[in-house]
Image (cartoon, rainbow, N blue to C red; front, side, top):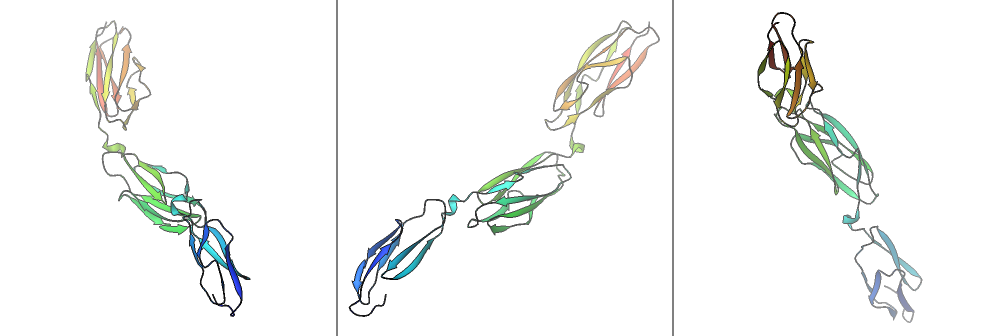
Length: 239
């Protein structure tokens, strides 16, 4: 600092986190040294040092680790055909951020970085594999989930047994359906005399179906239970 000879001065801090470490007072030209403590309160802050009638502003950034980022929506679930999604980013104005995707099938299309509030858009490629998949998008310190179902055409189904023969008096049985946990199957009967007693609504993954048939008072007959392309044939003797 510069001052006329014989002019006395003192240096004072107006904030507890600013400490005068040397040169707290003097006369004429001189030097005052100060230190600034680490900022752990989660916000940028401003203080001052006053030397005689002159005030000097001291500013300190926040610790980036105290920034919080809220994304809306908080992730996305996509059909096998893919799609796109835009998320809003909410954070304090002094918090900067970048965005990234965890998988090559997720592409950030806008909002690769910013400071304060903003938005991030990303696209999801069509899923041509035989499995559902999951990834994520990270903005700042916040990570959200991105999931995509498999193409239903890649699902494979098997049933056991493949059919049944009944006497004219009727009967029933069950069918075991085997498939992957993310594959949905549907069931139907080709004739009204063949009744599905449980599992008629289908399900995801492996399961079972129960069926029955009443007495046959006519000639021999045949009908099928169809499970997602698999045929269970039931033949019944005539009266």
